[in-house]
Amino acid sequence: MKFEENLLSRQPVFDGRLIQVEVQQVKTPSGRQARREVVHHAPAVALLMIDEADRVILMKQWRAPIQKLTYEIPAGKVDARDGGDPRRAAIREMNEETRLQAARLEKINGAYTSIGFCDEYMTTYLATGLSPVADQLPQDADEELAMVKLDRQTALAMIERGEIEDQKTISAIYYWLARG
Image (cartoon, rainbow, N blue to C red; front, top):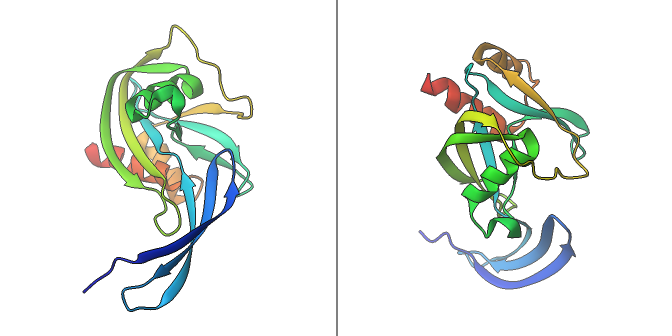
């Protein structure tokens, strides 16, 4: 059975600072024509940061798309400053968001974040052996962040109560809990 679609055309409809959107016309394996709306996003990184007291570090911040305050693991996009290297992006994001560095940075996995419409690929790292950075990088001017440290029981309870709703964060916390 064939699954791959044949791209017939693509039409850019939006070119923003964070995303680009295009409409694609495709021919399905069954011969039908279909329209696909695709969001292009730079690769991203996320950090499961565990401190010396075995607490996860989350960032509390406002998210405009959902109009809510969220709790999330530190994350950000891979950009020109990183030379396309997710590991370098993870180190930079850790500095910018938490003012911490990790003695150990281990790749957990890489995955597409929302494959139904977006090509963003996120690499998640486990960061341990945390200590303050000597040289602080500038934080994004439009971000208001507060660091929160949670033990295992509190993190799980917040997920169960619906207080943590971000998928990358929920997945990372479950990974941490499963590791014991």
